[in-house]
Image 1 (tube, one colour):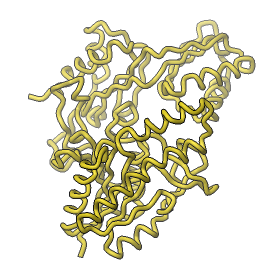
Image 2 (image 1 turned 135 degrees about the horizontal axis):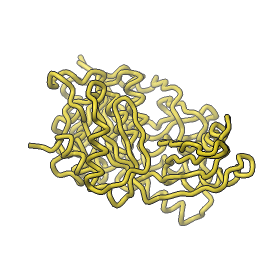
Image 3 (image 1 turned 90 degrees about the vertical axis):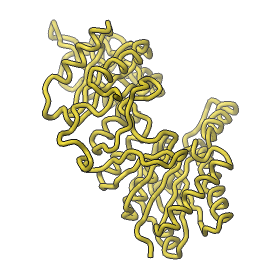
Image 4 (image 1 turned 45 degrees about the vertical axis):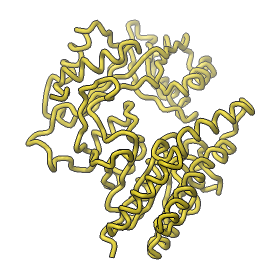
Amino acid sequence: MPVGLVVQKYGGTSVADPDRIKAVADHVAFTRNHGNDVVVVVSAMGKSTDNLISLANAVSNIQPGREMDMLLTAGERISMSLLSIALAGIGIEAVSFTGSQVGIITDTIHTKAKILEVKGDRVRDALSQGKVVVVAGFQGVSTDSEVTTLGRGGSDTTAVALAAALNADVCEIYTDVTGVFTADPRIVPQARKLQRLQFDEMLEMAGVGSKVLALRSVEFARNHNVPIHVRSSYTWEPGTWVTTDASEGAAMEDPIISGVVQDASESKVTVIAVPDRPGVSAALFENLANANINVDMIVQNVSLDGSSTDITFTVPRTDLARAVQRLEQAKSDLKFAEVKSDTNVAKISVIGVGMRSHAGVALKMFETLAGKGINIQVISTSEIKVSVLVAAEYTELAVRALHTAYELDAA
């Protein structure tokens, strides 16, 4: 009898070519032969998604969201079929399904749909027949019966959503790194792999730029209490556990800081001379929200004369042109002076549950950056996070300095 249900997600590098796909099939078979039911979620092979986007760009600069979703979902369908074929070749009965076939129901927003429901009846039926189920990640079907995609990183969300719907024992996210580190090892060679993290810490890390897990997948896991194990598909060694309570196996007290994360994918927008009266800020940000543009760090300057103020915020660089366009269109209604933007910025964040019980965390961050001659443009905080916006050329220097300052360097 199976002793558990394991959902495994394999990213694009893990299924990049036939040899990698066969290695994944061997690992799935290993998991299955040790008494577990297995559901596998796969991304598109290697650079397949980027190649499909390039094809679309070559054909036209007008790309309807519906048609892009139809195009991009082809990549995961190829992966799921090839992995099922590879499993058949080593004697493991497997069946592949698209997102719509397993009942991943989404809203109607093409290219960045949100999951509303996971039915999963076909998955349960296949598992009851002793089969391994291979599901195409990153996709679903809308309430209007249209194929949708979940945005980049959507395969993580698919895996966690399935794990929640099926009440799986664990959701294993296999990638090209061995776990979650205290910083990007490419920038900080002394970075250490973390054995355990709390959902809130991982949520903050994903939200400020860590690429190991997609933000929405961590939100889903926290909301449905799905344990996540981030592992490498190259070494199969134990990775980082992300759970509700990360205290098991940890020190007596939580470390003050768990990690330093950088994000160079955002741009700064400043709206100059906004009328300082009730309702203007709401109208300004409603305009962006209606265009599905996410706003992150927000700072409003103090109004000196009581008539106008400046509002600065960040948006994803991919949404900058649309954000500026939307604001320019609203300029006459909102009666501000002008919009300025800057793409030469990076967000640096320090994260850790230990902040809740330790004073001076932000001060150390500010002093460390000042000591390196790095000017802070914007600051935002949460209970377990401090983020600053700095000029992009200081990204690596800032990350290394903070990693050392908070005593995260490996011994």
